Image 1 (cartoon, rainbow, N blue to C red):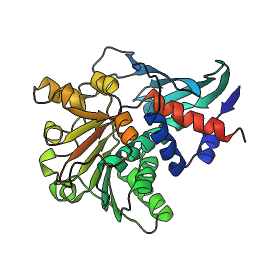
Image 2: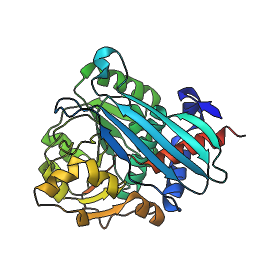
Image 3: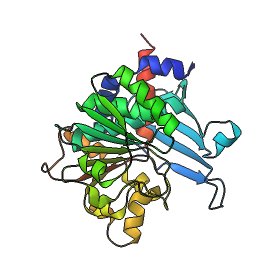
Image 4: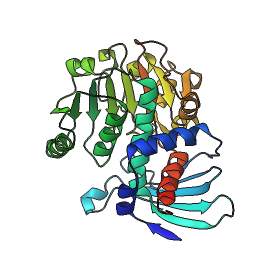
Length: 314
């Protein structure tokens, strides 16, 4: 059984390859039971959690286990630790133990970008990105793979981290103008795509500021009482998700509008698998506002880990 760490993963993957693998993987036969997230503390101020995500397709069986301790940075530890066990689908043989933390960065950003390929306008030029954490650079690189953005505006609370992120991205993508901004009506109104990867418990912008044709990508919230977008954003949009059973089990972005009686499970237009099977633009017109809400799926972990494993077999 192979042990596959972060260094191997980063050298084995690229977004062009992984986007193709995700499209194929989500469009073909797979099984993915509901992911199980266990709150480890009943306190309103402590959200430590443990999760288990199983999935299988015609090639592999996989299960990811991860811990999420959001206050870990105060003690000098990472907030998330994760491992993926990969088995042969044909014989059930253990094949690899894969660093799930790094796979999560790759698969989350790739799924986000794949959804944008289907839901954002092809002529999108301005990406507004909320967040400056570990996911940020992966997310922006993935989105730059599917759209020819001329400007990327970075919005984050930590000004030191976002300045470092800006410098790093500008060096890698000199043809793109990376700027640091603040959430306001003018900025949100100028965005073609808004991608949110934050730990914010409250909405990052006013949904009434969104212009027709905007695509909104939400990946940062996994808590039923928290949300990165407000109700106005949801009710003005055509809403898509990575997995209904997972999103509607834990994401306040949709659960709170449902609780308010202004949105329902039936209002979700499609899952990512539906989009991948069609594999073309899902926009009805250029003026639709679209939302893609993702909480992460075991299938995307399986596909990404499988790609890494296969790349090492020569």
